[in-house]
Image 1: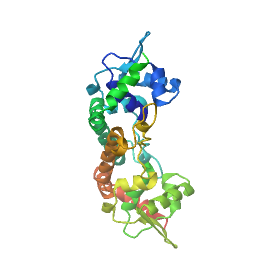
Image 2: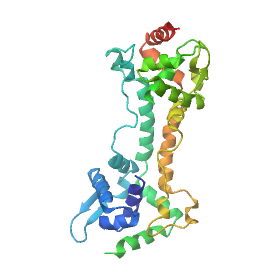
Image 3: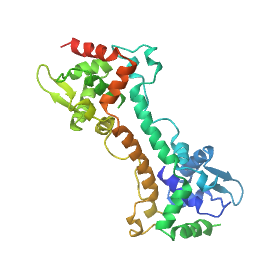
Image 4: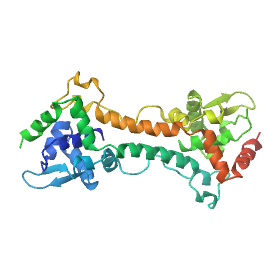
Length: 154
Length: 154
């Protein structure tokens, strides 16, 4: 998760249309290529990155960085299953609520899912471009260093 | 987690000063007493419940239900460790940022922790009394049924 967001921020600094081979991304993050490839496939399915075949192939952002939310990356990597799973406790035990009583969602699930929605809203409101700009503001030399390193091996 | 919140809502409906034996709570939730006891000890350490010794002993809410937030229960059971752990990726790899550059927190960690704070804020804003009132409003017979069942075995 953590490296996936870092990787997307790095891709945002490359000139448009630059694809980076998985091996190069793996080298940067000191992770096995196969592991990285698996997760980049998930990012591709989530519409965050696109793969380009061929000699200059690899992965690039699928959309402009200001159209990719941090939430898109989190959803692509971790899936959209809620963290809180309601198992309908109220329908079990010695005094189960009837099915009719359970037509409204359980109040406890409602609270927990409301909190997750607040978490999602925060991550949906921040784009990769915003993160990249924030980094560049506090570390002005970083984008160029990243560009040089990722373009060096081409 | 789910049953712990349900259990605290149930305790909120009992007359003040009523302690419930772990065995009775376990029976209600169809969970092993030892498992329940372990988690109720955690709730006690978190200041959510208090244990009372003796023949009429057991667990009761440690404070009025309107002074216990859903977040208090979540923190007591799951701990306060953030879900997102920043491993300072920026200080690793082929182009590590210097320690001086890392005096400001990583922007990615800032975004992720901001979202977790939004989640915490939501859960901090809802008390067990509010959940209990919401349940009672949509299921008016529930509090009495719960009271009768928990007091029956005394």
